[in-house]
Structures are given as structure tokens and as C-alpha cells.
Image: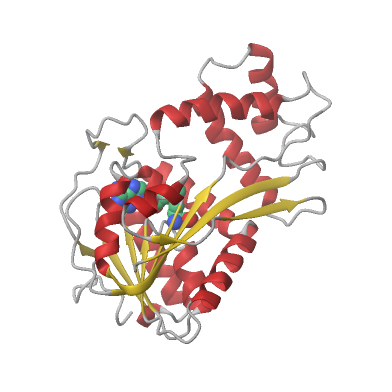
Length: 309
Ligand SMILES: C[S@@+](CC[C@H](N)C(=O)[O-])C[C@H]1O[C@@H](n2cnc3c(N)ncnc32)[C@H](O)[C@@H]1O
């Protein structure tokens, strides 16, 4: 594990001492730097399934970046909020000369990134840095290409983060910002159980909840990036729609996402709907999403590519 930049002692480089185990006091209910290993393992599994099933947008965005950087050097790459490294590994594949600095505030996520890099023989090209983007940033050096996927909406002051990022990029350097457009969906309108439209109702409640907790979720990042001093390419959308026969992990992914949504619903959905949802998640028979044959996977990504002038 030569150069995984957990310095020389085998630990990941830890930038600034953020504290674990409690919210960070930035006042967003959802902006918690939670540190529950079971929860983190669940999120990690979800991110891995996400990357596996929804790899088309990753491929599409890195292809777009390759076009935009034709003839340029792409060696120093930064992935902010790397999670389990979906973006990091897609970028390593697309840019053979690149070394990626994968940043996250979660030590557990970075551990996973290092394990994957080592297993793929890519550890010499990945450096992990544990840092809270809400605190002072460590010195990342000059960056040719930056990337952040589904992470910036978790940061308390993304405008400030963008200004700091702009200062790191070399002139002409690019930043790809990938955001989810709503949560993925899986269920047909009529499940043959309960009242049709369950997932629509469920998503509406969850979306309202998340909008309160994460004000930048679903933002139009174009003007925000312009305001931070970037030149911005027209936004692109990448849609994934998978239908039967679905790849193997789709059912598990659906169950994980539905279960996470179920937790967020509280009592804001009718009792009959909650009962059906529980049956989909934990039912013993064919109603369970793990055994249904009518699932779909639909997801959308919005992508902005910004350039430091
Ligand atoms: C939804 S995940 C996305 C992970 C990955 N980019 C992907 O697309 O699969 C968001 C990640 O951002 C990280 N994150 C959230 N807030 C952060 C902050 N303030 N500083 C550093 N990382 C943060 C989380 O720990 C998590 O790993």
C-alpha cells in the first residue's frame, strides 16, 4: 500500500480534528456528522450498489470530462466527499495518468476506498485524506480536475467550499459536480397491494423532509458556481432506467433505499401505506421487494462542469 497517503504510519492523513458522534452544530437537522458504524456500513453498501447499478452516469460524465480536457494534462485529481470511491475509481479508469486525492470526513469510508484501491492494484494512485470540508481545508496542492458527487449538499456552506476549491484549481482546471435529482425509485404504480401510487406518496414526504434538512439538495448549481467565479458548461442530465430482467443486486438496493426512506417517514404517511411499505421491506412472502418480479430502477443525475478561468 505504497502511497495511500495515510502518511507513513499506515493511517489515513487526518486533516483537522472534527469531532465524531454528534451533530456539528451548523443548524441543519440533516447535517450531522454521525458516527454509527452500522449505519455507515449500510450507507457504504448503498453507495457501492449505487455505483454498480447506476454506472452509466459515471461513465457518461467521465467521458464528457475526457472530451473537455483533450490535449490537457490531467494528473492531479481531487474527489470531495468520495464515500466508497465511486467517482475516484471511475476517474482513475478514465484518466490513466491521474492520481486521485479522495477526501471524506468519514474514516470508515476512506478505509473502504483504500481496501478497494489495494485490491485493484491502484493504491499507488490513490491518496485518502480525512477532512471535514466545513472546517479548514488541508493543503491539497494544485488540482487539474476536481469532482464531487452527492456530497456538496451535505456541506454547511457550499458557496464557501466552492470558492476554496476554485483557488486550488489551476487556471483552465475543471470541476465536475454531480448531484442526485431526487431519490431512486423502484416500484410500479400499482403493486397489487394497497392503494396505487405508494412510492409517489412516500417520495413526496421524504423529499419535503430532506428539503428542510438539506437546503442545497436539488439546488440549481449553475448560478452558484458562476457566483463562486467559475465558467459553467450547460448542465447535463443522465437518466438510468433499468427494467426486468434486473441485475442481481437491484432488489437489495431497492430494499435498502426503501428501508432508509421508511425511517424518514415517521408518521407522515397513512397507516395503510406504512403497512404496505413494511410488507415490501420485511414481508415473508412474494410481496417483499427481494422477491418481486415487477421492480424497476429509475434514477437521475444532474451534472455541472465548471472551469476556473
Ligand atoms: C452520499 S455520499 C456520496 C459519496 C460518493 N461521492 C458517491 O457518489 O458515491 C456523501 C459523502 O460525503 C461525505 N461528506 C458529507 N459531508 C462532508 C463534509 N462536511 N466533509 C467531508 N465529507 C463529507 C460523507 O461522509 C459521504 O461519504
